Length: 474
Image (tube, rainbow, N blue to C red; front, side):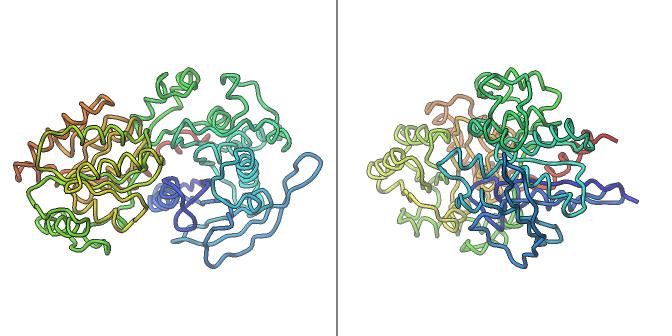
């Protein structure tokens, strides 16, 4: 009989029910990849739980009944429901703190804290209601971090069984607001921790402090958060927990992102029919109104317009490039000043640069499939998804050696990597790529190496399984 490991996986969002950002992709893919690992030795019973946001879209919801959480002198009613996704139970937690705050993430930090602390503690109570006990509670970011803290304090106060806790940190700077009054209203005491004073009242630091394992979303980011530059004031605390800090690279939904059958593409192709890819470049140039020049390097950015993403470095580099034969397409929204800078760049090079300041998933896929090079000069990048999609579609990435970019792109093998967050370093990398692009055989070798990489969620899931097994108390 295989050993069963029960995992309760908490997230603020998850595909296909509701998605705002990259966490939705992770929570929609990783739990299913974990369940798929079940074999003769181990069975993973992973169950997903998310808030029942007003915008959630779910079919065949089955009510599981009501229970309550004590909050100060009152009680808050919790409404739980369930559906099945590809054989996996998915639970939805509803209640006044969730329904009163309609958006997944709002601009009101206090309201978000009330919603997500309620959700985290209600999710901890859910297993008792459904007569199923987790061996591991797996939280993601600050929104669900209080599940780890709540689980630990419950064990202290009630002598509850040990439930191992994991927290995945997708973006360390987002720690949640001062939540001391909310935490105490639920009857939880603020423990004397070895966190900095300012961090002892914030959900993410408390969750990390209470967790058996802290996981960053790439090995490099796992090392970066131990440094003063990227540790956001928690580097000393994290260094004291080095034994529990690791990095596991996020995966890519390779079924969804597959150039062989992607319906958004004009011409499908794969690693064995790479010659067909050039038709997508021609179609993209036509759609954008760029000159149809197959031998001209077409650079691309599909990005949030944010200084973190290094888009300003890319704009300066493009302005400074002396080479005459290149084109560029930029798709993204964000900082209005950077959007304006992108439009100014287009005005400066009207026959070379096309800018679309909007979100367009179909166009994004056509850009990945039709462009030659993908620029990702991020100042920091915990994991990054775009460089993985680019490689999957034969678009060679030019990236800074930050976070997951450093873990997924190998310089001269699957792309081009530069170290310094400066436009001159980016320019040098672009010029290196231009030289190789002129040699079709060498270029296709790099394209094929990128396309051949196994970036699936299965690899990530195997590492999480090893982690679960290492922290479960026998």
